[in-house]
Image (cartoon, rainbow, N blue to C red; front, side, top):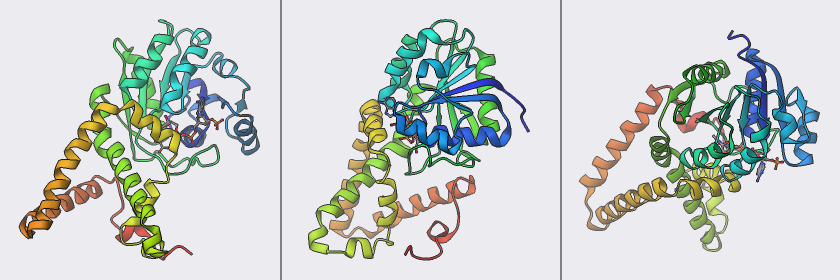
Length: 307
Ligand code: NAP
């Protein structure tokens, strides 16, 4: 539908996000040739075996040679080192983007290593699963999901428009956003909820001797959804919290205050407070469904208990 937008695209890092982007690129015919590089031989071998990328390279420098778009798809904490390595080998006029879940820290880490004749436009697709690695990707991951583009100071408008067209060809809706605003929004919608899920699963694990297998047996009652989130990649999430420290701490501070207020309402038997609070939160869920960002099916459309 979109036609070729970039002649050559290079992926550095070949996990869930890069592999999903690759399959979506192929689905829409958006790119002439796609090269890829991952640090481990094992991931490169797997990529070659499953046909992930048109050409797998044994170094990042080789992968980015002559690339019109370079996508950094590694954990946030690994971006600086990669940028430093590839910086001197980028094609003049190329665009460099990333898919990291945090934006201010990535921009600060990557931008100083890139030459002036390259366009750096940070990015973040708001789509993912708890799976990782080169075999976890699928072409539909970004369909009807938002990708946020975060241009740096003096980003070239034509380069931003081209990257936007590329993401739309992948299936995503696109919005341009400022880095600090991005980090605050994501702290609310993703980072703090992940930390809460990790905590809840950790608490249940601490209790497991008392409850025996009940935690697993009766997990459908809410806990199962926490366990899915808490199964997300440990390296990725360690890096998210270390690199979005201020916004996450701000939101967790507010969360703790609200939690105390609810705790107090329970202790004092203030049913009106609880009811009003839960009515407000239910409306938020309805808004998400109306915006087409989740299913209306009961229990997320699960038909029967997993075996
Ligand atoms: P993933 O499936 O775990 O894959 C990560 C890739 O990065 C692998 O190819 C890995 O190489 C490579 N890598 C890991 N540590 C590295 C290091 N220190 N130096 C160089 N390469 C390294 O990860 P992903 O889920 O695709 O996430 C990639 C980026 O997308 C992250 O920045 C994450 O914040 C962001 N993101 C993730 C999601 C999500 O839900 N998963 C959603 C939106 C954005 P090897 O395989 O060789 O180890």
